[in-house]
Image 1 (tube, one colour):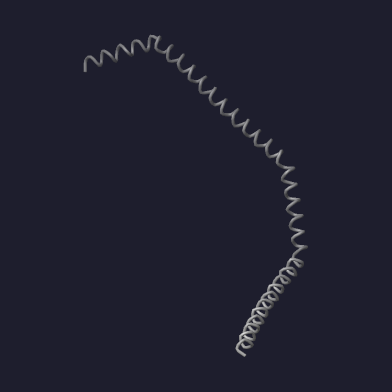
Image 2 (cartoon, helix red, strand yellow):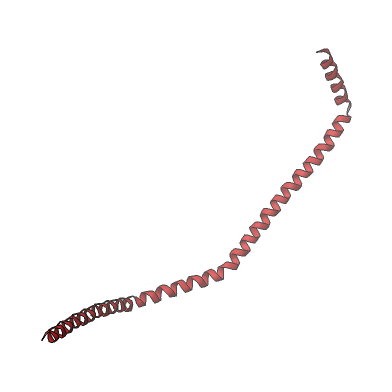
Length: 123
């Protein structure tokens, strides 16, 4: 008699466990079906977005060499302008040195420097 009661209790427990497992499997299946239906409704939109992205990437691929060429041209122009600026500075510097040397050799500079040194000795 006790043996039959224990078997009955175990059987009822197994029925409860089976019912719980089946219930959660049913809920999981329902969740998966909802996700599947959502994906099916969104699928055309996903396809259109992916086609748009593909077209944009093709356009960028076509425009990239143009942009690279423009950047190279602007870099060359910048380097050319900098080289012009440096060459102009060197030219003015060499002209300035020649002018200063000629000015030092002139009589006006020599007399002015003698006059200033005389003035310095007096003061």
